[in-house]
Amino acid sequence: MEKQVLVFKLLFISSILSAQNAIKIQKIRWEISIISNDSIFWIGEDNPIQINVKGANNYGINIQGGTLHKTAEGYIVKVKEEGAVTIAVYEKLPNKKMNALYTKLFSVKPIPSPQVLI
Image 1 (cartoon, rainbow, N blue to C red):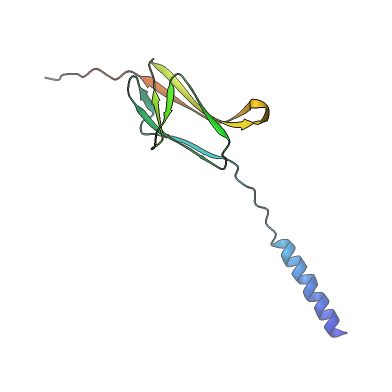
Image 2 (image 1 turned 180 degrees about the vertical axis):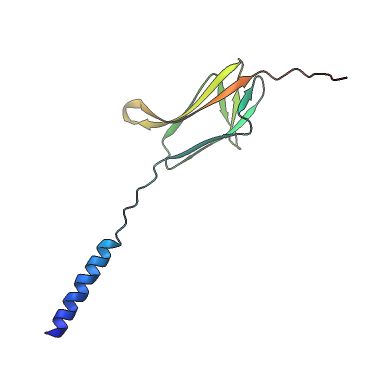
């Protein structure tokens, strides 16, 4: 009888411990970053950026105010007018819908004229 009680207690304690150790882990779905050497894009220059998207394969990138070209090292942004550029990363959903996940705004300025100091 004592062995049965001991076995029952051990089973009961192990079930309690296993229930307490159950950890729910929430999967991080997206991790997105847009990295530039400068916070400003220069008109007429190649402005290199890195766009890192972790956690998904089905995404799109959109730019407003300039053009974006993929290279082996990342992306090149070209701009023609002073103002601002917005780069956005979208999740592609069924039925050709897009869900905005991340946006970043960059200032656009002309390259300053050289100044001669005497």
